[in-house]
Image (cartoon, rainbow, N blue to C red):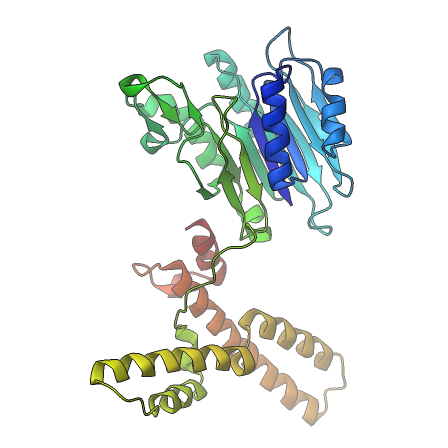
Length: 368
């Protein structure tokens, strides 16, 4: 699923409409969130229909200010639960089908009093739903000094309310690629100020459902805010993964034989050239052995639990009891391998694994 959020600062202008069409045609989002549209929804429904968004939730602007719209395409199942001038909340049932999650699209007010009321409302939304939660849009606030470039340095008091909410709710800032800042005052030279006001925040359950989620910042020529696009399954066409030696391989004696076999390569040339060729050969043979013999740890765990469930439904004769004992030992070994795998990926070296579990290392990896 792909979500696009953008502050368009009015869709009455032809330039804004062209920019919207260009970004939608480029990323083909399933959900579209527009804020600061400044005109009634009736004047832009034809435009949104032409882009494929036939289902809309609209909050009309107050005069020539505000106005937010959430649109989604056929095939996406969203149930709106609440909407106001600053957010639209809905339950997404279509991805994944078996576990709905809460979507909060944000357009935060700039007035100081309005900000505090908004934070309280957002906190209540999070507390009312125990499952996966995604907040995305313009939060009109910063989480730290790195979110601003130029102008006066930010103080801890200016981020306290927003950062306090993020910490209290246990929200995670989704990693992004592209420009470091999403808003600019468009002024030249030293008067220029840039800030990261638009972002996506999620709780830990949402990261477990979408561990590959990626936020991408796209350029814009018609607004001081840039569009942000969330790819829940990561962006297609990503670079191939670099080779990494997995520590869990050492728990299998066959891995030593794979390395020994690769090291028998008789390559001509200098000692350094021979060493490089043998390392390269070992890498290729380990990758092939991992695919064909060692296999995916998580898949093996699921299969072992399935087999254990089946064997425990049978009569407890000596043969079945022996099979059950072997499966229990296999599950213990596979669970240990999974813990080592995620511990290595999380790159947490200062903590001992005796008091931690696989889920801790898994979430540490996702957040990192």
